[in-house]
Image (cartoon, rainbow, N blue to C red; front, side, top):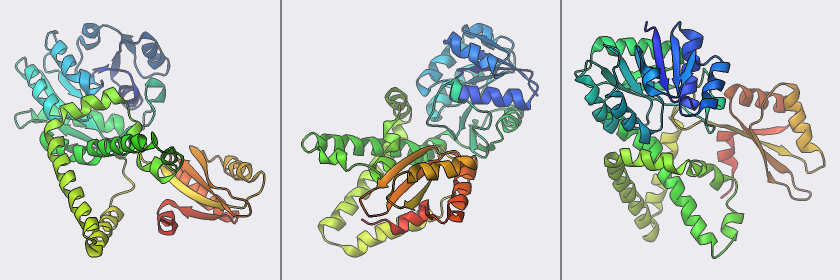
Amino acid sequence: MPEKIAVLGIGLIGGSLALGLKERTNVTVIGFDRNEQDLQFAKAIGAIDEGTTKLDKAVRDADVVIIALPVGKIKQTIEELNLLPLKENCIVTDVGSTKAEIVRSGRKLSGRGITFIGGHPMAGSHQSGIKAARSLLFENAYYVLTPEPHTSLAAVQKLSRLLALATKAELVIMDPVHHDRIVGAISHLPHIIAAGLVNMVGDYNEDNEWFHRLAAGGFRDLTRIGASHPIMWRDVLLTNREELIKLMDDWIERMARVRSAIMETDPECIEHFFTRSRAIRSKLPDRKKGILERRYTLYVDVPDRPGIIGKVATLLGEKEINISNLEVMENREEIPGVLKLTFKQEKHYQNAIMALREANYVVFAEEERLEEVSV
């Protein structure tokens, strides 16, 4: 087991890794960040043993260096590390969501006897910063490592054991190019599509404000990831451009086929499109943490009378069930309303369903609601 770990970047990901390391291993964790206040907070909560704003001090004598910085800064940091006297046999890894380009940069370290192994913990949060960090952020998620064929097997095993222990994640070994195509399809392309839909509707709304007025509920849920950080996603897309161009070409071709089916009034083609989508989606795993944060949603039919929202909230609060968000979807006079309740944790979601049904509320779980919703 390594004795000293340097975590470069004490934000959500770096802070969560540091917390896991301190809780589940006996290593010394040195935190590096440009923000002195974040370092002080990280030390106060026990995430790091020592913090510094100087890179050379952070990595001095470190057995493992974890670059937990945005994708746009990872290659730059590798360049800086290449100029520093790292410990012999030191392992350097990162947490970036793209891998091929970063792994190519990491080869510069191998000539000095340093092992670079790309990494990507596939879990996150809508929150950011050290104050959102938690030691179980990666529990039951996949943690991908992308060593090259010549990478020392002993180094891969050493890093895998350390990360598995610290994160409680499931370690997976994958080719970096293969990783980028998969993540491009399940995360990067969806972000582009979501942002594209939001921008398109925004343009339409300039001429008719009803586009935004009616863009509640489903549209907001569908495009939630379209509100992601612009600079971060700029860098992600540019570092995965080769795979994304192929994926976008494929997407455009598929949409062209759907367009033709609609234009040519081909009901069988359209029905097959949605039938296949429904069947595939039903087979997707829902217990694993993924790169896009999972949220748990249920719907409650409630009578239209004063105090009913407070009554529901109080019922769940008394049972220590935390609601992440509450939205009134329908509330017309003499017609039952629908409350949409969102939860961050599955246990609160499941407990809420049981508690509300025991109190004789009509409750629809997320998939059940899909069956009932009108179009």
